[in-house]
Amino acid sequence: MSRKRQKNQNQMELAFPDEPMGEAPGGEGEGAELLTAKQETENAARKYDVLEEILERDNLKEAYRRVKANRGSPGIDGMTVEELGEHLKSKMPEIREQMQSGIYRPQPVKRVEIPKPDGGGVRKLGIPTVLDRLIQQAVMQVLQRKWDCTFSERSYGFRPGRSQQQAVEAAKQHIVAGYTWCVDLDLEKFFDRVNHDKLMGRIAQRVEDKRVLKLIRAFLRAGVMEDGLVSPSEEGTPQGGPLSPLLSNLVLDELDRELEARGHRFVRYADDCNIYVRSERAGQRVMESVKRFISKKLKLKVNEAQSAVAKPQERKFLGFSFTKWGELKRLIAPKAIARFKERVREITRRNRGISMKERIKELAVYMRGWLGYYGFSEVPSQMKELNSWVRRRIRCVFWWQWKTARKRRAELINRGVKPDLAASTAGSRKGPWRVSQSPALTIALPNDYLHSLGLPKLVVQKA
Image 1 (tube, rainbow, N blue to C red):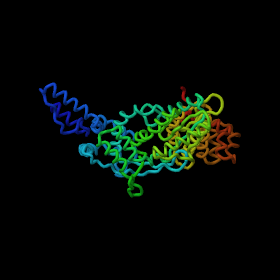
Image 2 (image 1 turned 180 degrees about the vertical axis):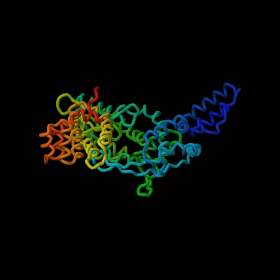
Image 3 (image 1 turned 135 degrees about the vertical axis):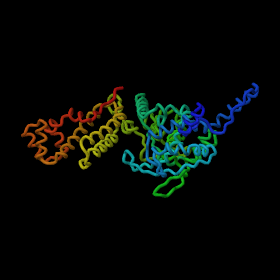
Image 4 (image 1 turned 60 degrees about the vertical axis):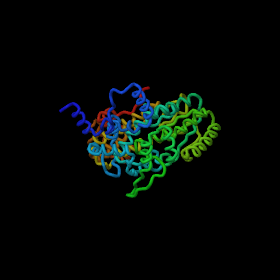
């Protein structure tokens, strides 16, 4: 088999050809004047070739890799991430042709409701089909490379090389600099209320390839399936698709530029925006002015219940707050600690019917993930208290599993507790939570033993 034939076969297997089909090769032996004219024509047309960048083989392969890594639920067609690869092998040429001719039609997204972390109602997600997720991801990768460098330095959400921790640290630096009042803005149902025409107008200022504009509008207007019925999408960018975060940054870039033009110190992560000022009076003035701008210019609405002018120590920002006395330090917000405890209680509840090994394994996965984010705290005492609280929960589980007074007495004695203490503890009328800090259980189930079972320790990460 020739090398050329082998290359063509490999491309068919990957379903991502290197170049669009049907391009004529350039002629040879042409004069310098013709070559120059051709080069100028290509440069002039390059700005219209965004779709070709999206359909490049390497870009599609990267999009497929990310969609596969993110997994996620199937959309309305029921196709799973695992089934996507086989589908692309047979359908990618057809999909490419549809996108190039402007007739590709995304399917409606599947409506899913999840509870908000702070317990304030539910968040509505729109789950696209896995094929639509792949195409959105491919579009996002190309546009993000072009747009990200133009966004504000004060914007941290959904951007490469930027994180929530960086946003929290930037907020801290504003407070240290003397801007000790915070205008905490929360946009009401932001992702559901983005004006399509205004958004498309901003995209058109950056993208001149009309095929891409048509494709993005098709995603915005794909509709939502809920309880078997499809509703049209007249506004909003449903959370759940890879493209929505980038489009949200484009919408709110207008807010960033306005705040910069006014000389404000601020930090924004997605639709959470904190502006830092020197006095409460200044904060109230800024709040009213910015609310007018958001309403009239962006056609969005500020959530009055969640927004306020206050000391930063009285508010939470991305799960963190700040100490009220002494040196200013980052600490975990009370609501974040409450959510942690709620999740640990769920994992360790008595009627789950799983082994201690499986229970601690599940708990360890959650705790390590939580620590990866909240280990950014600068207050070790919070972690120390949570470590103690988690160990008490585990001791409660052991106490429940031992069930009877006879079993409990035997277990305590076998684990080194003196018979008299074991008997009095086993016969106690106190509840499991109070018994969990008794001397007997501390001896029988010491900290080192619990950690030897795989229970992680929560510690503040070193700077």
